[in-house]
Image (tube, rainbow, N blue to C red; front, side):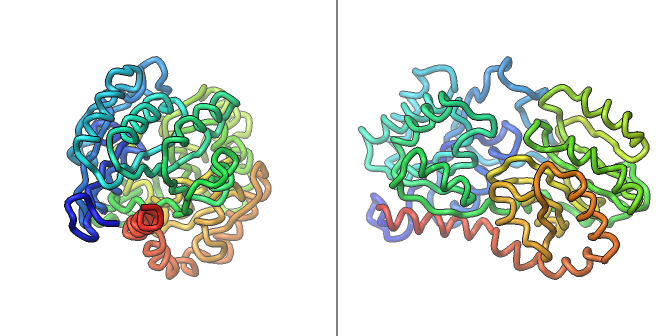
Length: 386
């Protein structure tokens, strides 16, 4: 693709999505992609002035209060509930004359805003619009969600999806849309400093012994309850403890009650809060094994943090997880909703010494899931659909 100023190869790219001061995986993703693309192209990040109204956000705060916040320069133009800002944002991006506009898509709540912004761009610019889909449809979906998604997707020229399942979901909405599958890249920016296992455990208040980690916010589709059900057998056979680190986006009482009913209070510890960027390294360094017992998923940023920290995983056979967790190389994959299968996989990992056997595989996986590969995929998609 040739840029509007006539230079071959280098483009002007508008990147639409959340960035600092917002917290969370989509913000981190958008920032990492912006930094990678800026090595090759001119990049402008168009951010939100208001992401969610406070009453709609399930967590304690939408903002990144971490001293080690991941930042990128951005223009905070989009108010998700103010249509006037949608028109202004579309006009502002059109004035940038971008060759490509890359839009982060993760929930149909944003469909009205993104539809108007992209419609303005299609009328007043020649930019090619690419949606990067984190979830084509939400985990808990409805016909209204699919309708909103279809309206927004009608404005895109092409799509990047991050699993074969999401490609299938996209095809149900826009059957012939140009699209490429490119798995979620790794979150390697959390690797700050040189943590030893001992220092990491001391920092998070854990001692010796096998340690499992469940990381990230907690909702029903994450399958945490099934992992808790597996803990009596895991504890009996391996002596492992479980750290549940993340903010509850639902009532935490059933989880805590189940731990008490199972007699696992001494083997399960909850860290019920959003973990700042500077705290991620000690939690992952301290863990022997990361467990993703999801009941549904298209992809997982948690898996990509685990790969960045060379941490093996037990994951379930849902969505794109089997495409990321390499069986017998970086982890094991089991059926979802099966506590006995989770327990068997954890026991096998420790009894057969798989930590050392899997360690050599992570270097290649980091290359496979690099941000450079994502940038290559975006450039290829634009070249094919320019």
